[in-house]
Image 1: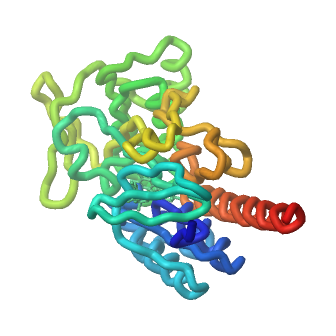
Image 2 (image 1 turned 120 degrees about the horizontal axis):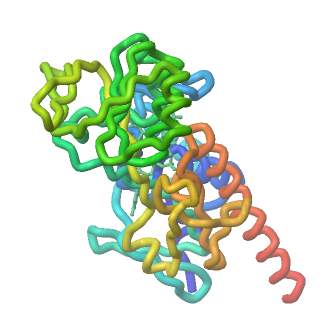
Length: 309
Ligand SMILES: Cc1cc2nc3c(=O)[nH]c(=O)nc-3n(C[C@H](O)[C@H](O)[C@H](O)COP(=O)(O)OP(=O)(O)OC[C@H]3O[C@@H](n4cnc5c(N)ncnc54)[C@H](O)[C@@H]3O)c2cc1C
């Protein structure tokens, strides 16, 4: 059976585009299907990406798409809904009703960040509502910052953000740190406030505080939350790929071997879908590795078939 491509990469963020470049440069026929919503899209710029500091997330993916095309790969806007095994490979079904086929799949669909259910958080997510000190801590340095505590990860975040500002408050919204954590927070200069948060108060495009359930305003310029980052969707389910809770409690992910091969032969994964803490560079590196793994898989499969006849 003639297939449309050798490899289909589902998800065109840093991981998927890097996998596709590695494959296209190995003269593989590769198609990237991308829904165009990288996880960091709400942020103004990408940081901790050596040589591209501050680049807008969509400019980074646009540059990656151009590199894939430069080497003969194809990129298509769209959403893969399901995929199934067929003779010699896989068929991928898209939400527009079309269907494409390939010998191998690379799934780089990332994660969805579930935020605490508090008014205003989603609106300012990635701009003034943050989770990662390394990504955007510098941009809010020396500002008053509140950490909305919802899990042990909030203590970790408060400690890290204390490196960036002296005015930091951990609000015990739905998580109360134990004695050991409290002594660490005190040592790091973090104020702990027993209160629960009602909503984020904004002034134009900026935050000016957290309105607390007791009616008072905690004046802050940035808010730190701990999302649950979840890999899920009909695509993974249709392929028989299971997500499992990450031991850190940060969310759900898919376990793969060091090269990105999943429990389903022929399906590789890379980026946040398999590594919740991967930043852009880490996701890109994992994508390159998965692309290379697919290439050697195809090289050896074809060589073996020729020898066997
Ligand atoms: C607010 C925020 C700011 C961040 N800032 C930084 C930073 O400054 N520096 C840094 O290094 N990291 C940062 N990160 C982390 C960064 O976003 C991730 O490391 C990176 O996006 C992971 O890349 P990925 O390719 O695995 O997934 P993504 O970049 O999320 O890409 C996945 C792609 O797959 C697509 N997709 C999903 N499902 C389907 C489907 N079924 N069919 C087709 N396409 C699909 C999505 O639309 C998306 O385009 C930030 C994260 C957040 C949440």
